Image (cartoon, rainbow, N blue to C red; front, side):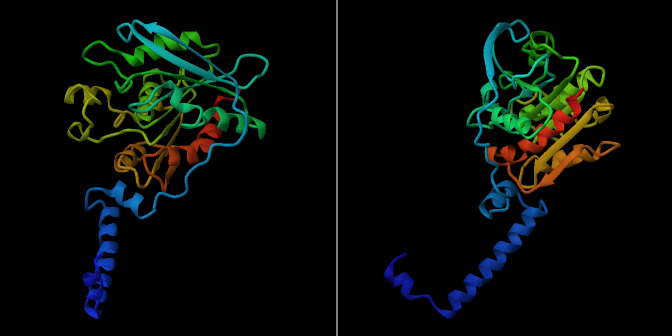
Length: 293
């Protein structure tokens, strides 16, 4: 601020400044009530997203990585990682589906740290299980018009590589949260015990979807999770979403569509790693409980 401008600070300017604070509060409330766009940004700027989650300072469970050429994905080389505690006998498996722009590695290490969250869970006496993450590209975990089919890749190519798919769950964040709900519904309770979704990328209409999420309106109608909650009957479902997340209104609509409300809920948080890490211990405990023999 220049010296001449600073010298003009008067009682009137202070009063105007006070009015601006009131106006900012009113704007925040309007955003909260969804009367204005940009609610996610406003929540972040105002510090309404809650504390950031912290990856436990423990040694991660051992992991193994590899890749295969996927026929279902039209010859794409698909990477995968399986993180699992060292125990005798086969472990139940949670298949982990990543978000848009990410790959199978983002569940682990310094990104989301699920290999360390799982280690801390088991060290505290929690039931062990394996987390198996796989690449799906940016195709929203369902068959696309060009023939690329990450859903078939998971079901027909990746699952047969795993040891114990009789005790199976799906989990995922953002695009992968949608994918977990979608694939859990496709396979149903005959094959899936639990589904946990963090900040699932959901929309209530085709016109609202992100570019590339679906081929067209017909693809959206055929593949949306909304209106298909009954496909998860008999499957334990958990859905978590931050109140500062742009997907939160659609996620609420989805949750409200269940005859019996899923586990999880809504608390301060954005569409961020900080929120996903905070929810990771609860998500892992939920999966372990329902995968346990």
